[in-house]
Image: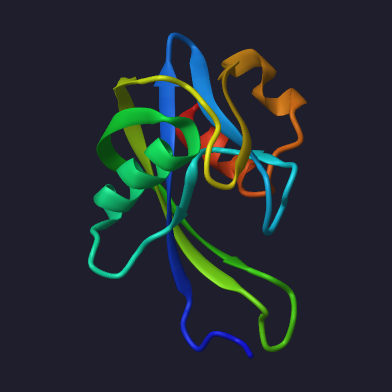
Length: 134
């Protein structure tokens, strides 16, 4: 059965010392591809709370969530669509924690900006990188 409404999602663009925090997706759409940490927003939490929680769950890091950098609809090509995510990505700043992949992230690491495009990225990552000026 298909969802009636889009699923709200969030992501965090965390840049530190010329590197971007990325996770390799462990399951779901685009498993094995690299993207910024993020996921589904839960009922009752703000988007900013969802961003901080997702970063903590997937990377072990604690961030302060800043401004919205980009919003996008991710819809498959089926009729009716099998999935439809409305994703809002925020910039975020590192506060603390220890980098360690968790939850549905197979790997988490700081990637030098010059090496990001060498990775197998999710399709929306290319436009996000442009929005970030990276």
